[in-house]
Each structure stands twice: as structure tokens, then as C-alpha cells.
Image 1 (cartoon, rainbow, N blue to C red):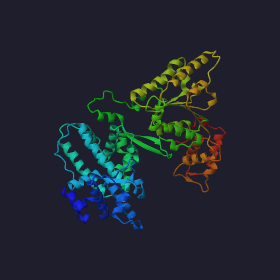
Image 2: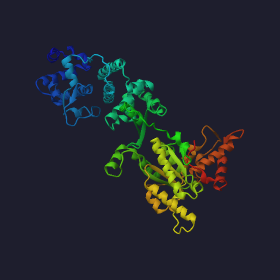
Image 3: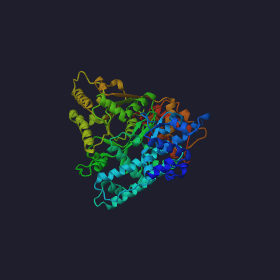
Image 4: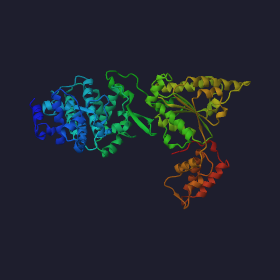
Length: 578
């Protein structure tokens, strides 16, 4: 107790043995001395106002000038609030602290007792098992989180971080030494070496693994929180973003993945997670995985029904009218965990993952229905299995019932075998969706009605995301209309939208004649698909010239040809074609 008594009786607190460890001013140390005396007298907490009035003059409100010092002691971790509603120090003003109570923290009491914060570690021993190793690694992440919290709470760099950094170095050294002494292979350590993961990648992975073990939906999964964990200044934050962007080692190796969701401010945030197969192999290392998950593109050639599409554009690349955009944004929000949990609690959904949506995209050809389907898939991180419904009659004459079922059976089989959830896209679905014949006199009518009945049955029980595209909604049978919970219209773009489309699609890096006006082209009433086709045809024409300069008249000639129907504009698809 010599150190404690020395601190309590000191006339000059800066001469005490523990002052060098405090990293605070003399006045701030006097506050700690005051509280230490109160603690010995049996008083655990004291109002800040009382502390300042006892230590400093109230004349001219001099004592209020020392509020900053009390706040610093809270930030350093020497004090803690004694309150039922603790406040986040970074978000509270100094004046708000005046009428709150504080007490000495366990860290300061330990310092008073031992005279030092140096960690005395027991003898190095091998890890008994995988869980003991994880316990040390999770404690390591806890230290990273504490340092991150200090960096966010203190405007100036806090010297309190030094203590945590020292503790972290000792722990990391200890983990390394224990691993070296462990004869049995530790699954996670072996994995880090196999994947050649550097120290920062390991911290990101361990932070996500800790979240999985705690079954938490913590914001630590969010991109900025993970970057903050491993960054000590603004430069490092910018540099470390590359660890979680497309093409990074962690993502390209299939170690982690992310979900995108709309945040309350209208932007899209990323929540990261460890890929499921990998997660199970670490959480249950003793289990041998008997079935290896197949990738969809590795077995797609086994069937002749679907085309597999890997979307290249996201919803940010498409230009849509306001109502269509709002509907798609609402659909995107369904992947938010809070939204899913609400729907499950209300009995609307019977599972806690995935989106169930049957969608019709309808509108004139070339308004971007197919491209938007691909872009929605990209934003949801899904692949697309596309089926061209216009081929249904030529492919399956005489076997409509059997083969319509085959479409859905094959889709579900592919999903089951690959444990994936691609979007089913039924392009040009008019054959399926049009009104059924009431007379059904001919065999063709009977076959068509039979085919539609089976299709209706399959739509009814479909789980997942299905998108059907059609040109005319009014031709759809009412029975089908009721089965689709989203009916999204694609209108022809207005002049402002056409201007955006022209700007996106005009050849980049090309030379244009003096006085070329993109706005003049936007005045022509065209769909996105037509603009796309006009740009391509004009580019082919200009590319063969000796002086390949784009002229206003070049585009106007192609516009005229398109509007006069000189070529088939009905088949031009999408807004953008990279």
C-alpha cells in the first residue's frame, strides 16, 4: 500500500511514483488524488461539480475551466461515469458533464495498487485446443476495438492508446510463441498461412469471426468500422479501403463477401461476412464436409434451357423514372436485417434470409427492362438464369405440360446443387402471361391453356426472385396479375433522361465536330434501346472514315432511319452496353 499512501499524502502530485504513467496534467492528477481520498473514505462516486468546487475557486466561475480536464480523464480511462444513462464521451459537451457523478476506474485502482500497468504474463504454454487459441485472438480484437474507440472519441491523439498498444504487442508476441510450441495444427493459424493473409487481413477476418461467435448484428461488420479498426490515421483509412474493395485479396479469394443495403441517408452501405463454407470449417473443424458446393457456371452446360448471366451493371448505371426507381429501392431494402426480422415477427415471412419477390417489368421495347433485371441482380450480388419465353412454342410443341414444369424443376435443381439463389428471368413472357382462350376449341388453344395452367401453378409456389418481362400489361390474364407482388412500369424516357442516356452512350475519347450539341439529340423521342443502337450504327459508319470525326448530321441520319423503321428496333435491349 506504499504507492497508494504516497499518492494520497503527496504535496506535489507530479513527484509521485505513478504520475509518469498517468499521461495527464498536474491539475488533472489532483482530481484523481481528490477522488482517491474519497474512495478510501468509502465514497465510490462524486459529483463533478462538487470536485471542482472543492479544488478550485468558484469566484468568476474559475472551476468551470477545469471541466476539460475531467473530460480528458474520462477519455484516458482513469475515470468512469456512475450513471444509469452513461453518455458517449465523444458526443457530450464539457458542460453536460457538470452534474454527473464519476468514480475511479478499475485501471486506475490497479495502478494505485501495483504502481505500474506492465502486464505480467504467465509462462508460455502450448494451446490445448482450437478454442483456447480463439480466446486469445478474440481478446486481441477487443484491444483493437478499444483503440479504435479512443481514436474516435478524442480530438487529439490520446496518450492512453500507448498503454493499449503495449498490451497488444505483448499479446501478439505471446500468441506467436504459444503457436510455435503447439504440436497439433491449429485450423485458423493454418488457414492464415495457406491464404497468405497479412496482419491487417487477419484482423478483419478475426473481427468478423468474433461477430459470428457472438451471434451479433453489430455495426463492426460495416465497411467503415472494419477500416477504422486497422487504421491509425486518415492516410491509413484511405489506404486500407483497398482491403475491402472489389479485386482485393479477401474478396477475390472467396474468404469474405458482403451484402449491400440502403442506409437511412439514401446511400448504399456494405455489411461484410465470412463465406459460409469457410465459416463452418473453422467453427466445426472436426467435421468433414462430405458435399462440396458446386459453382453455377460449372454445371450450367449440363442443361439446354437457361443462359447464365453474370451481370456487369448495377442499379447505379440505369436511368429510370422516379416511380420505378422508388419501387426498386423498396425491394432492395428487403435485404436489410431489421426489415427481415420485422416481417418474420409479423408472420409475413417464414424464414430469416433471402427475398421472395415475383416481379413483372412491363413497357415498350428498348426501355431497359432486361438491363434493369441484370442490374438489380448485380446490386443484390446474384447471378441470373435467363429463359427466352418466345421460344416456348417452338421448343415444346406437344409436350407443354411436361416441359413447362421442366423449366422450374431445372431451375430448382440448379439452385439446390449449387446452394445458390440466382434470379430467374423470363424474358418476353407474353406467351405465358396473355389471357387464356375461353373457347379453347382448337388443339392449339387447349395446349396453350394447359401450358398456362401449369405456369400459374409454378408461379404460385415459387420461392426466390422471379422477374418476367413483357411489353403490354393489359394483355396479362388477371389470374397471373394477382400472383405478382411487384408490377413495375418502364416508361419511355423524357428529354432530361434521354440527355443522360446520350451522355452515357456517346463514344468516349472520340473526336466531335465543332458545335456538336448532345442536347439537340435528346429532343428526339427515342427509347434507351434505340439510342444504344443509333450510337453503335453511327460509330461503325464513322470508324471507317479517313478522318473519324463524329458530326451532328451522322447521328441525325441514323435517328431518321430508326424512326422510319429501316431496321428492327424492337429487339434492341437495355440502356447501356459496355
